[in-house]
Amino acid sequence: MIARPDALRIIGIDPGSRFTGVGLIEQRGDRLRVLHHGVIKAGTGEFPQRLGIIFEGVKTLISTYEPQVAAVETVFVSKNASSAIKLGQARGAAVCALVDGGVSVAEYAPRAIKQALVGRGGADKVQVQHMVRVLLGLREAPQEDAADALAVALCHHHTEGTLRKMAALQK
Image (cartoon, rainbow, N blue to C red; front, side, top):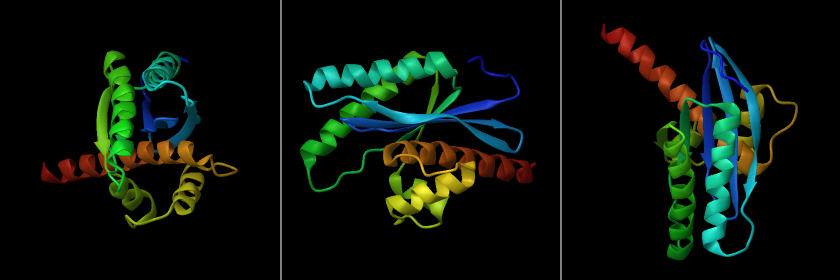
């Protein structure tokens, strides 16, 4: 799929060591459309192989959809340090694939993503799925990880739009 020169393609990534959510949106003028959403299923095998699956999955999406920018969720540290480390490594595999593919990377905290979409940083997964469906005009809510990835892409879209408007006001 060849990118149009008048369009901006954003890939959103919700990293996970077993399931990495991915979502691609295209902005043309004021219009947004979904190009793809889904999950890279790394499974439960040996961890290094799972990281390879994530890396290759992201590389395939880059070659297929040619995004110009990526938005990646940062690591959320809960109570389990081991899980946070694995999540960080899965995120690293995705980021390395993006950088290797020449895609610029922006990073967003989970609370910032929820704030941008729902209006409050403590929103739950169902609220995020609902807003993704509404904002992108989808018939049904995407699977949870894919919805989270689309939410990251939408957060970047909204954030960059706000920054552009603020810059224009400074002139």
